[in-house]
Amino acid sequence: MASNSDLVSDTQRTLYPYVTGTSVVALKYKDGILMAADMGGSYGSTLRYKSIDRLKPIGKHSLLGASGEISDFQEILHYLDELILYDNMWDDGNSLGPKEVHNYLTQVMYNRRNKFNPLWNALVLGGVKNGQKYLGMVNMIGINFEDNHVATGLGNHLTRPILRDEWHENLTFEEGVKLLEKCMRVLLYRDRSAVNKIQISKITEEGATLFPPYSLKTYWEFTAFKNPTVGAEGSW
Amino acid sequence: MFRNQYDTDVTTWSPAGRLFQVEYAMEAVKQGSAAIGLRSKTHVVLACVNKANSELSSHQKKIFKVDDHIGVAIAGLTADGRVLSRYMRNECINYSYTYESPLPVGRLVVQLADKAQVCTQRSWKRPYGVGLLVGGLDESGAHLYYNCPSGNYFEYQAFAIGSRSQAAKTYLERKFENFMGSSREELIKDALIATRESLQGEKLRSSVCTVAVVGVGEPFHILDQETVQKLIDEFEIVREDEPPAEPQPPAEQDAPADQGTGADQGAAAASPDVAPMDI
Image 1 (cartoon, rainbow over the protein chains, first blue to last red):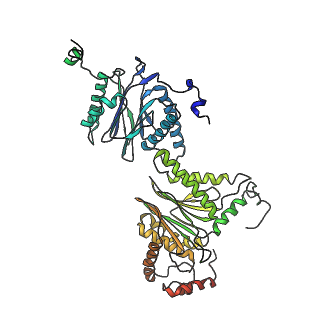
Image 2: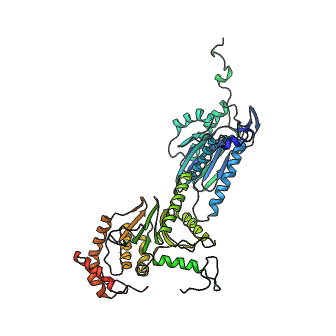
Image 3: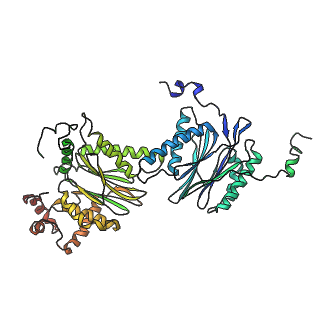
């Protein structure tokens, strides 16, 4: 029996990503979820696009942040658009919450992975419904989980340790933003695909708010930055 | 209803704008044994009269668990009811699988109604001959719906379908205003009393009825015979003190059948001699 991957020629499948977004970081705070991402779209090693919106509200209760292939992200937005549309068409007072959207996305991502035609993304899905906060992640191979704070890509390695130390239940909005900025600053220093134009968005029971993009203040006068290779292995 | 020249096909309208086949399907529901449903803010109780054909056979299953948060009681062609229950279970499980969340009752009921409507508009199909009382829990609270063979559905505070359901409905009409605030026990008691009304003088025993409950923190489940009998015994004693609240049947009819002693099982069997209530 011919499977879909036999019938679909290589040029129709995602083999490698082209325009990619880097890390997304998100955490639960007192009133809901805070999410941050920069606005960069890299074309390989070129920082080609500097105004890509990687955080989008979904329905009334959720926020989606994506890293990875931007065109696949746009495809996912299209699927979710349809999902929310049909949900609204019931017109019956019920609505899909963040948990439902996250599980739907998990099914989509895992199914595509099984057909060897993945959507090359790592997605962060957060939201609040009926007072219940939800924050989850799903990536291109279908790995998914929920936690109090999540990150994608390099964020997993650089920012999760910070969050594990400094996150606590019932952060205020200001504390949450400060913590996110700290995470984004580390990424800015250390991730070569990061650009200094970040967007923070929050979602609470009242709805989603996307704040206008801004730049982080950076300090490059650290002594460690001045002569980075002094004393390195193999140097003299 | 009488036979006429417009009733052969479900796809034939009568000059008065009626689809007789659909109406005949609704008749089938009225012939089935009674099913009753009531709800409060937090619970839904379904009860039905379950009489076996003979002492040798088992009862027909009329209450089905559809999911942890939804159950259904049927009246009419039980085979149709079984098939529709399977459909409902499928829909619930598919939704749960994709969204890891329970399917809202309101949506299931609409899907069921749409399925029934299809059968009223295809010349090669016939309408389902079963009425369904769907009880379930949502984010928005407890709900009770009635799905008709016509493809209509209605939400109810309390309802009864099937044969001699009018007696139950009359009882429920008197009490329904308080149901929203009822406790779980009060609701079950009212369901059992309503079931007894449908039995029309026959003694209420757990062997002739089935009761199921779903509520906040309580997944849908059918109560076992022992529990039901205990509940019946509890309020049967209380009932002695109740003023004669039965709607129409003459007092003499009740007296021999419901005095609650074991010997009267024989008297109950004799009550078929008394003419059944005209609905």
